[in-house]
Length: 98
Image (tube, rainbow, N blue to C red; front, side):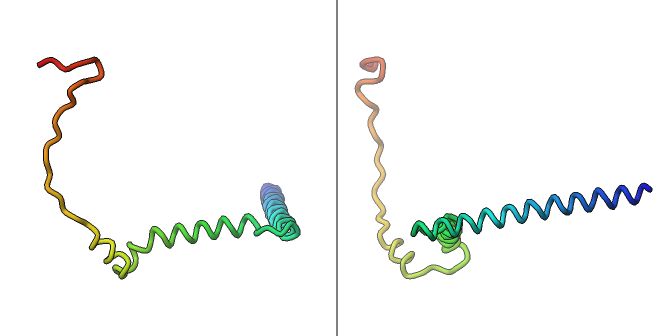
């Protein structure tokens, strides 16, 4: 008897999960068709496009070697002589004491 109840609960959970899966797929298909009828790109494709662009941007320097573009950017770096900046003559509360 105990195993029969356990099997029934597992079947109900399976039906519940499958119904959520079908609802999600149907909502996604309706969204795609609605976007195409309005002449717009479907939102799910633009989201994946943003993810792909971001992953390419962040992985470009990590996974691949330096490209000519990164070498050109390194040539633009100029060293300057450091110097000390004098303190301001007037602080927030008025002139600084001497």
